[in-house]
Each structure stands twice: as C-alpha cells, then as structure tokens.
Amino acid sequence: MSWNLIKRYMPRGIYGRAALILLLPVVFLQLVVTVIFAQRHFEGVTHQMTDTVLRELALVMQVVESAPTLAQGAQDVQTQLAPLSIAVSPANTANAVNQRLWYDYSGSVLTRRLSDQLSGFEAVDLSEKSAVSVFVNSRHGLVRIEFDRRRISAANPHQLFVYTIAFGIVMTLIAIIYLRNQLRPIKRLARAAEAFGRGRHVPYTPAGAVELRAAGNAFVNMRHRIERHIEQRTLMLSGVSHDLRTPLTRMRLGLAMLDEEDAEPLLRDVDDMQGMLDEFLDFAKGAAEGEPEHVDPIAMVEDVVNDARRAGRNVTLLLREGVGQGTVRLREGAMRRALDNLISNGVRYGSRAEVSVMLTDKTLRIRVEDDGPGIPEDQREQATKAFTRLDPSRNQDKGGGVGLGLAIAVDIARSHGGVLRLGTSERLGGLRADIVMAR
Image 1 (cartoon, one colour):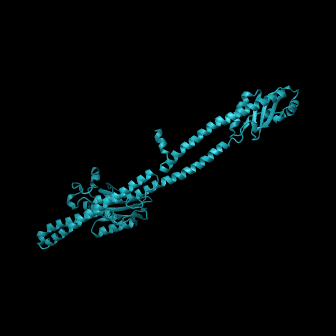
Image 2 (cartoon, rainbow, N blue to C red):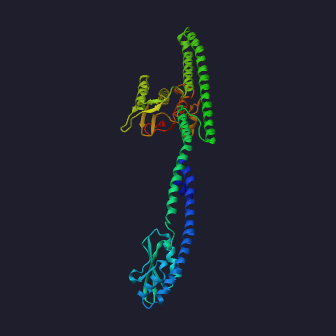
Image 3 (cartoon, rainbow, N blue to C red):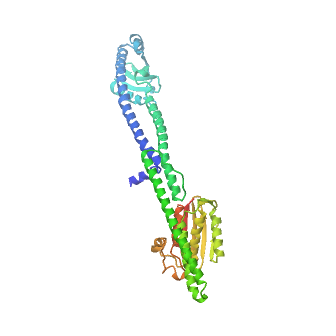
C-alpha cells in the first residue's frame, strides 16, 4: 500500500525520473556531508575556542572576586588583563536572558558549553553578531563580561551552507542540460514511432548513446520490414484481383449470348464474384492509400452519408449540438471506405442505419448504428478478423461478401492510431460500431 502511494507521486515522464535518479543521491549526499561537517567541525572548533575563552573568563572572575568592589575589579581587569580585551560591568538581572539569532548554530553549542563549564554562569547574549555578553554571578552581584565574538566561534559559519546550496544549484543546472541532451533522441524516437503507428512516415535518424542508437536502428529496420510487407501484400492481392477480372469479363460476354432466363443465375454469380474482387482490392489497399491530410471529419461524414442515400441506402446522419469542429489528419479515401463499409453492413443486416460524429479537443469518434440482429459479445473479436462471416447471427440471406467489411474498417482505424469498437446500440437495438482515434 505504501509503495503504491509512493508510485502515485513519482514523476511519470522519463525526464523527471532520470532527473530524480541523478539528483536525489547528490542532494542526499550533500545533506549528509553538511550535517556531519557541521557536527564535527563547528562543534569541535567552537568547543576548542570556548575552552580557551573559559580559561580567560576564569582569570577575569578571579580578579573581580579579589577586588574590594565591582568597580575596582573592573578597573583591575582593564589594567592587569588589558591584552585580553575583555570589559567587565555591573548587570541588570532583567537582561540576564539567553539570546541568539535563529540561524546561529555555533551559538547553541557555546551556550551549552558555558553553562556546563563556567562557575556562576547565568546567561549569554548572542543577539549581536560582533560581540558576546556573558552574565556571571559574583560576590559583588551579577557581572556582565563582554568580548569579541570572533574569539569564541568560527567566522562566517554560514558560508558552508551557502556554498553547498550554490554548487548544488549549479550542478542541478548542468545535470538538467545533460539529461535534456540525452533524452532528446528518445523523444524523437517516440514521435517517429507514434507517427508510424498513425500511418505517417516521419524522417528519423538514430542518434544519442550507443543503446539509443541500437534501439533507433531496430525501429528503422522494423519500419522498413513492415512497409515492405504492406507493399508486397498490396501488390499480390491487387495483381490476383486484377488478373481475375479478365476471365470474369469473358464470362460476362459469353453469358450475354445466352437466353436471359438461362443466363440470369450465372450473371448473378458473376456479379457476386465481381463484388468479392472489389472487396479484395479494398482490403489490399488497406490504409496505405495516400498521405494524411487535414480533413474536416463532419463534412466528410456528410458526403459519405449523402452518397449512401443516393445509392438507395436507408441511412440517417445525426448532428447534435456541441458536436465540435475543426480538422483531423486523415487519409480521407481510406476513412471514407471504412465508413462506407460500416454503413453497408448496417443496412445489409438491418433496415436502417444512423451515423453520428463527436469531435473533441483530443479525440474523434464516428459511430454507425443499425437495427439488425447485432453481434454477440463473445463473437465480436472474431467478427473483426479477415474472411470471417457470422452467418447465423447476421442473416446469411442478406447478401454476399467475403467477411472483409469489418476487417477493412479495423485496419484503417489502426493505421490512424485508433480502434474500432463494437457494441450494442441503445437507440436501435442492433450493432454499434465506433471508430475512435486521437486528434
């Protein structure tokens, strides 16, 4: 549970994670070194300097205690101990309070040391940066002893922290620049792979570290193999379909010489074979037809629906308010063919079809619904495979086809970086087919 909570707040991108991996040990090491240095150096140096001053303060208190009055004692200190540069004066009890600046680390060490080692110690005032006032009880009353702060603590102890922070910031900037240069090839590879997944060819040259170059070369080789595979498939199916058109034409001419009553069944078979060849050609073209262009999807869907109506299909276009507007990079010819296949399936296995479009800032969804028998949920994945026909549930008596309609739509949707989702229409009760893709 705790590990999942930590993962939730971890950076999502590789740049943030790499920076965290690089900077976290550096920051941790700096903190450890700073703490250890502060404890070993500042405390040790402050103890040594304090012990020296304690001996001087003991000598000063000995002179004060031996004098008949406090004033005489202060004068004796000035004359007898002049090289120590220590001033003695009577003090007010109200001023005898421990005071220091909030960032004065050595001051806290000094206060503890004086309290433990100085007899009669009452308080120490470290509120001034250049002077120290120590309040000590004597037989003449409370005494205030003043001397230079530099004698009891290291000068400018904050410089270590300033240097640590300054160099930490400099090293962080250097690390950020280095990481950006190292991660730029990864981002270029990701953009090229994403574009290729959407059917766009983006020029890409492997760069960066040896491992990144190896990954880039592997991607380039994979892209070339896939492109060659698509090209070979297209040429093979196009060639086979094209070669079969010639004997079909001869058969049609031969049947034209027979009686109409005898030739009608055979002509119907020839038309079915011609339709199958057209589907083969559409499948061979796949999504490799043309280059992606900025297309208005709403206008494109309207044109496809109007063409379907002119062909005698019972199809309706539903344009609701807030449908969105703008353009999307599409292979218009391929997308038109996918939508036409979905509409053809809808009116073939049902009596009517409805088409709707939803365009947002991030996604495009084209939906086709019909009032046919639909496809059972456990058979939907199989229905999208090539050459698959679900005759019992999709009305075999409704017409021919070789089971490529949904396969072509799936292929085209995937080539645009999207998916084809099948479901049940809540409006019409039949099949619901959604082509969903990112803008």
